[in-house]
Length: 423
Ligand SMILES: Nc1ncnc2c1ncn2[C@@H]1O[C@H](COP(=O)(O)OP(=O)(O)OP(=O)(O)O)[C@@H](O)[C@H]1O
Ligand SMILES: C[C@@](O)(CCO)CC(=O)[O-]
Ligand SMILES: [Mg+2]
Image (cartoon, rainbow, N blue to C red; front, top):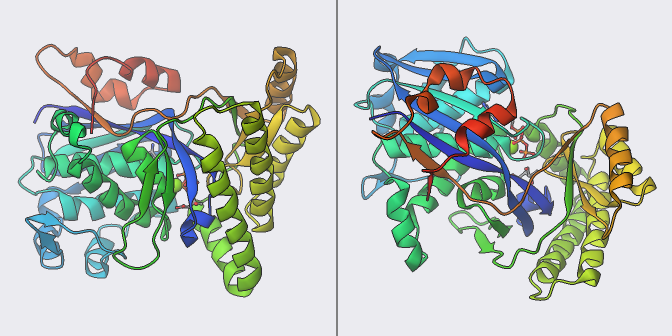
């Protein structure tokens, strides 16, 4: 199969992060920053991962991977592998011996995610390949980078394994609003997210798959499907996205909230219920056909309340509080952490008519603190593919060039081109 790209967006959680893990509703929107995966055939008996964004280059001999042994433990329905509530322990054990030489947690979880999805979705008869991922998203910053990577890996391996068709078929199906291939990608990328952080709600991979903006609610009963409500009239929001650049792990932060919930169940329960109410209120406000100034003011109020509740759960960070303090001092709007917190990004819902001078002053203060602000739009496309055909510029599909891009804008300029098709 000729080289091809898969791309999936990151996300911004507007309301409801962490509460989403406990089955409360949360609102999130696709971000215009994305992950891109280039799949190319190699002429040796290997599967090669080139993930320069996390300084990972790793390969396995295709013939040595336990594909056959794994099949005995994989449930299939109509020939397709069935996702499970928990990671399949037998398959995890089989993978374990192929990860022994990997020390860093980020490398380990990424290789675990790849091998878990490969053994379930791909087919060893697929020629040996190289898989390279690059992101215009900041990694580990609360913008869904793990989910966008998981959706890229899932879509690539499911396409190679014959479990989904290329997206031009889905474009025809969209008329019937059925999109089995996108649902397959969504459900299997959740398995990928489980490799990254154990107990994901599914909101990140849902947005990375389907794009747009959603109210999402995980159902806690096993086998109960989550509820994803597309927000069709997503209102234009003036948002500032600021990265503290403080590294952190979603797995650890989600684990920290679980400890609070175990030690103080009633208190934590009241906090999570309050987040549930504000997320539901925000959904109704954002769904108003005539989204007006008082609606924007109500949303900013809910942003401040949501941030306070996340502080109470212990997932803020002094750098996030610094962003909030600078923003509040200059009255630019309402600021909250987004994603798992503990560092990473904050979003500010800007006040109406904030002057350019004030915004420039604030952004200079952020820069002096070592923070990075992002221009980004919300509500864009979900997972898509770009195939190399006779009319394609071979340079676009050069692994060498793709691996060596050193700036986000180089990736963006090279790949925001015509020809992409979306599931
Ligand atoms: N471009 C990439 N290449 C390889 N691995 C990646 C890439 N982007 C993300 N990852 C994997 O995802 C991990 C970061 O996931 P994590 O869930 O901690 O942060 P996030 O997804 O950016 O934030 P949040 O989950 O709060 O939205 C990285 O350590 C790495 O293992
Ligand atoms: C913190 C969390 O709510 C969002 C992470 O982006 C975890 C999840 O919902 O999977
Ligand atoms: Mg993540």
